[in-house]
Length: 520
Image: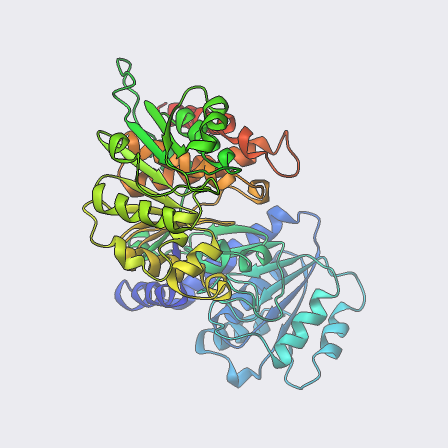
């Protein structure tokens, strides 16, 4: 897995490398620029004319070194420096002087009119690539003023942009894109990913992201890191073992309490996913009017009838007493409803079941404003909310969740002492310890009704097989997202949720093949 840093952690890593380990900042800058130049040559082999935009800080210093190296290699280079020379940071000023001595064409853009110098730079031969070295990671507010004008003008030219570390207009510490952004076709970032590279909507402005080594040791980057990006290899190592002499009793019995009249599909899809994900036995406990539909929809699972109210929803905990015993794990919520009967049933489950528990959909809604009710459980729960459900759980507005999905997922995990799966593009899995993992697979092909129910069954199956909650959530989310990407070859729009379990099996096979390759 790859570390994902915010601005503060990246500054600390830089400072430690320079002040404690003794690597001069100018050396890091030289290494960084060399990697950017290599990336430009690889990505744009036909490019000959490059416009480099430099700010006043060390990101601008990186850009000045890029300009010098490109100039030395025979490129036609123009560098616009958006500051007076005396306003540059010490390392940027040093590289400004070096670039000038090397004959790099340099222009200081200091007036309010930024359009004229940019248009002048575009005169003559067409510019093939723009290098964005204006701000780097440190922006903490929407871009405004002269740089905002420059960004809007450059963006209107429709020329490929290579961002140095972070596209201008984004903050390394956020997935938000609040103001103008100079969207990049390629972002070359140094030492580690930043939050804007992996969290949408900011990540959508970064294009392809290349992480390059500039001389900062991995242990320096990882020592205080609390956020990680998952990779195939991580999940391959976390897949459950399936002993050759295993039987249905070996792999646990999952009970799914869900569904209602007219909502039987939710529990049927969860049950089917649980079967495919390896639960030894699956029982679907549903209100009596939904039994026939559920029973015929998932032949491999058993059904259990629960008392129903006049509308076909669960009427309480009647019927749960006889089925709860000896279950390895319990998943509650899809299609359950939020009426009085569902509320009574959930409270009874929380009081009477101490094993691995997954709560989804209506089960989360029933805990609105009360995440701490789960904190005292003997075994950590897994919660799988979408943004609306997470907002209700925390007593916030949906806009607050979307503004900082990472922080709100971590907050919910801390308050509930549960593993929280904040669903969405780049799903976030947060642990009560404060750590979080970002799942890079899965996209809008999961945007159809029932896909969340499939995730419930998948994670529930891993809980039943004895995986600890965090491991079950990581593996389940990754297989679920990977399945959607594989199925996209057949379903160009949305993948029907009922088809997803079969593709989860395909994803598992691919990861097992990767494990074989790793062993070789």
